[in-house]
Image (cartoon, rainbow over all chains, first blue to last red; front, side, top):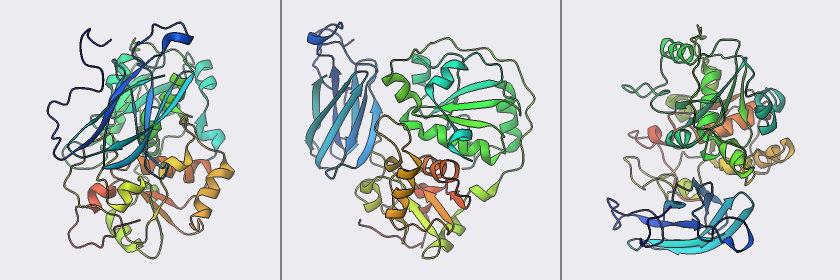
Length: 107
Length: 277
């Protein structure tokens, strides 16, 4: 679980040269209103895939123990597909070099 | 070489977890996932630390492969079940690797870690203790492995299939987007290669599409499978996935994996390169 008081979103950007990388990252949290898990629990068994502007698969990562993920993409429009047991959510994002796209996605 | 002899379902694995003839191996680039949880009785191979020579860029030697399998309790008559994350990329690489060294019965868990997790099947953290075996490998089977000179000679003559994402094929990205975009290679692809991303062959849950769908992927892209085919990607693991589709699921014999892939080709001096879609 994320440490109480920390800023939500993807993993630490320490050590990443943001002038060269186009980062899309975030954290996947459970929306607990309709199931038995606590609202806001990190989704640690999720998979996030990155599709390009034409919908082609570009990469996929599993979420970490804090429900986080990260991609190194290129500037432009992308779609994230979040999968976890019993859940599937799509979210469109626009990425830019130098400014990380940092999301919190509830499923 | 067929879906029946090369692929098993999660149900099959669940029923054979305690089968003494079966050895389950998780293969990946990141074995911390194995440490966090894996299929009961599974051991793990790290694709680089266990399966790469380390000094020269090559597979480990026959003697080292024999030692690895022997200490892992894998015998020549074991049924080896491979699976992993990353949509089974490194597990299919290991499958191809086991075939290079002539293992008789090796199979892939359809959907790998991802399908297992999406089905909410159990993982354990206990690492099994395996009894030492005596494994004897065959000499490398180079009929399923392509080297760079053959790839260069194949330009415009054989089928060359680039299985990376369209963004890597065109030169927009240098690596899959879960990795930092850096590296010594120039960007682009081998001229006359067709871009048929590995992902076309997989469903969203990581399982393979039907044989009819798989055939159509290649036919609709204009690939004449009667001709020799060479598949490549960046480091040879995604192309092992596509090699598995063609050679094992569709039974196409004349297919090679170029495991040197773009990491090698994109570093060669003076070879032709194409960019764009």
